[in-house]
Amino acid sequence: MAKIQHDLRNILSSAQLASDELSKSEDPSVQRLAPRLVSSIDHAVALATNTLRYGRADEHPPQRRKIRVKPVVDEAFEAALSGKERVIPDDRVDAVIEADADAAQLFRILLNVLRNAGEALAEKGGTISVSAAREGAATHIDIVDNGEGIPEKIRERLFQPFAGTTRAGGSGLGLAIARDLAHAHGGDVALIRSDSAGTQFRVTIPDREE
Ligand SMILES: Nc1ncnc2c1ncn2[C@@H]1O[C@H](COP(=O)(O)OP(=O)(O)OP(=O)(O)O)[C@@H](O)[C@H]1O
Ligand SMILES: [Mg+2]
Image (cartoon, rainbow, N blue to C red; front, top):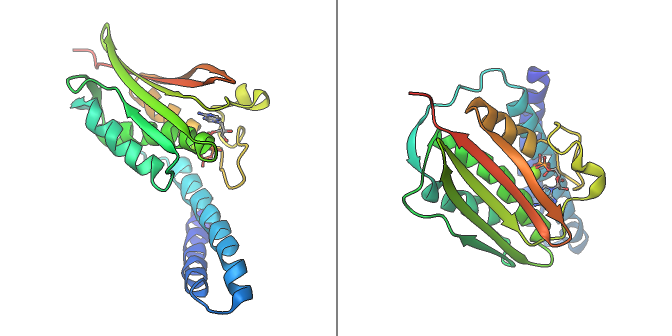
C-alpha cells in the first residue's frame, strides 16, 4: 500500500506541475477548464499525502516538553485560514498557558480541527474562538466556531478514518489523525457540542507523570 501511494503521489505531482503550466494559457477554453483540473489534482495530492502519512507505522512517539500553547495556536490559525478572508480567528489563549506536548504534533492536531472549522465557515463567514485552560494535571484547548454544525449522519463515525467526510475532496482523515496524535500523548480530541449554532471541539493533553 505504502509503495503504491508513494508512486501515486509522485505521478500526481507531475500532473500538478503540468496543470499549473496549463492554467497560464491564453486560450479561453483552457482558461475555463484549467482551474477545475488544478483543484481536482490538488485534492488528489492531498488525499494521497494524507493516506500515506496515516498508514505510516513510523510516526514517531511525541517528543514532549513544556511548551506555550498560544504560539502554536497562532501558527495553526495562520495555516488553516490562509485565503479564507471571511473567517475571523479569535485567539483567546492566555500567553502563559503551557502544555506538555510535542509542538509539531500539537500543531497538526490544531491544524486539522481548525481547518475543518474554517471550511465550515468559508462560504458564509464566521468566527473561530480558541481558548485554553489548565485543569488538574492537564491542558484543555477549546475550539469553538459559529457555523451550522456537523451533519447528523456523520457524527457517530466522525473520528473513524475515511468514514465521515461530507466535502468533495475531503479524505475523512483529519479528525482520525488528530485523535491518534492526542492519544499518543495520553490525551484526546472530543466533540463537545454541535448544533445549528456552532461546534465545539476539545483537545486534552495531560502532563506526563513525574
Ligand atoms: N467545525 C465543523 N463544522 C462543521 N462540520 C465539521 C466541523 N468539523 C468537522 N466537520 C465535518 O466532519 C467531517 C470529517 O472531518 P475530517 O477532518 O475527519 O475529514 P475531512 O475534513 O472531510 O477530510 P480531511 O481533513 O482528511 O481533508 C468533515 O467533512 C465535516 O463534514
Ligand atoms: Mg478535515
